[in-house]
Length: 114
Image (tube, rainbow, N blue to C red; front, side, top):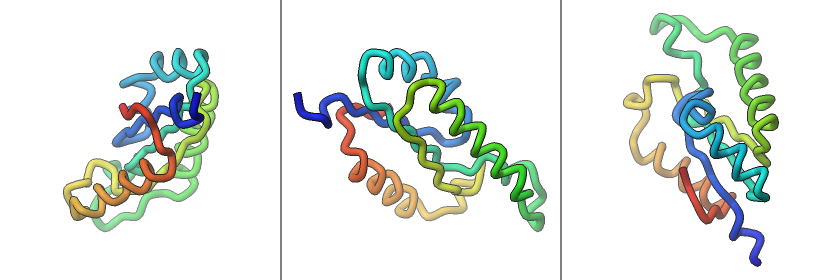
């Protein structure tokens, strides 16, 4: 079997969406031998601040570290965080979002995408 035959990519908008949306599936697939990769597009904190405020970097790092711990607990092979503005994807050109996802797909070469 080709090594890319068991690769799975989970694309989530925000941190914790991957767990709420398909956490049990991630754990099952990893337990069954799949290489599960998770890509989280939004950084997960911008929406909590007023427009002119900048997110607290320490809080952001803590959130990302928690996401990594959970991904590893579920058995994911890798987690990538992409720092698009949380709940403000409409402020990012659609082509930029598409290119980002294409980049991840090209790198991971998954057989299945969730």
